[in-house]
Amino acid sequence: MGLNETVSAERLHIGFFGVRNAGKSSLVNAVTGQDLAVVSDIKGTTTDPVKKAMELLPLGPVVIIDTPGLDDEGELGAQRVRKTRQVLAQTDIAILVIDSTRGLTGADGELIALFEEKKLPYLVVYNKADLIEWKPALKDNELLVSAATREGIHELKEKIGAFAPATAKDKYILADLLNPGDIVVLVIPVDEAAPKGRLILPQQQTMREILDIHCTFITCQPEELKQTLANLARKPKLVVTDSQAFRKVAADTPDDILLTSFSILFARYKGSLPRLVEGAAQLARLRNGDKVLISEGCTHHRQCNDIGTVKLPHWIEAYSGAKPAYTFTSGTEFPEDLSSYALVVHCGGCMLNEKEMKHRIGRAVQAGVPIVNYGIAIACMNGILPRSLQAFPDILALLEEA
Image (cartoon, rainbow, N blue to C red):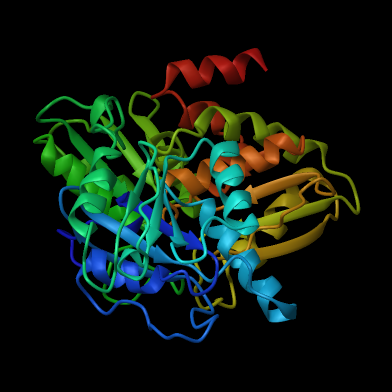
C-alpha cells in the first residue's frame, strides 16, 4: 500500500443487504461501474461478503460490501447469515435491496429492525424496476431502481452521498499535541515480527500527520533511542514507541519529554481510550482459570514469538500471578457472547474502522466485561501507564480517580 492511498479503516463502509436473488450483486456492479460481484440467476451465488475499496462520487474513498442473502438455508446458509451480521458491525451506511417483483419479505423486515436498533443510516432500494408495471409509493429513504437498465442509479448514488458525515473535528492521531516545528521521535523495532521492507499502518499514518502539520519526525530502533536523543540539538516534544518496547523506551526517555505508544494514540483516535484505560485495572484482578480473550483485528502469519499468542500471555501471567485460560481470535472473528470472559485484550485496531472497533468495545461493555488494548495493557504491566498518558491530562485524571 502506498503512503498516499486512503486505507480501508479510514473509508466510509457501505453495505448492501437483502434476501437471495434480490439483485444485490447486480446493483453493486451498477453503482460501482465495475464487475465487482459475480452475478447469476441462481439463488445464493454470493457466499461470503465481498469488499472493494474504491472512489465513489460524491462520497470519495469508500469500501463497498456485497453480502450473502439473509434468507440463506441450511448449515452453510447459517454461516453466511452470521457473516452478513458481522458486516453490520463495520457498516456506516446500509443499503437494503428488495426485489420489486416480490416486495418486502419477513427477512427484509428483520434487516430494517436491525438497522434501526443499531441506529444505522439506511436506504431501501426496490430493484428490478424494469420488470414491474406498478410504481410503489416511496418514503424519503426509499427509491426504485433497475440494475439492468441503470434506472435510478444516479439518484441512488446521490442519496448515498447525502449520508456522508462532515469531516470529523478534533479527531487527530497526535496533531493536537504538537505545534509547527516540534520534533517527534518514533521508536520502531525491526525484529522478526516486523514486515519485510515496509512500515505498518499506524506508523505510516502517524508520519503523514506529522508532515501535514509541519513538524519533524526522526525514527530509530529502541536500542538507538539514547544516542538519538543525545544527537538532537533541540529536545523533542514527544516520543512515540511500539508497545512491545515500552519498558526500554520509558527507561531511556527523560521525564520532561512526553511519552506514549502508537497503540494508545490510535485508541484515542478511534474514540475508545477512556474505556480501554478503565479496563487495564482488571489485569491485576485475574485469577487462575479466568477466561481471557485476546483478539486481533487483522490476520497474519503467527511468528514463533508472536505478541498475541506468546508474549501477552507470558506478561499477563507474570504481572497477575495467575494462569488464565486464553481464547485467541483474529480478523472478523469476534465472539457473539462475551459474558464468560473475565477480560478482553484487543489489538490496537488499526485495520478496523472506527465503527467496528466501537462495536466490539460496546459488546464488552454490554456484557459487563472489562476490555483493554495491547498498548495500554503493556504500559500498565510495566508500571508506566500514568507516564504514557501524560499527554492526555483528561484521561490521566480518570485513571487517578480510579
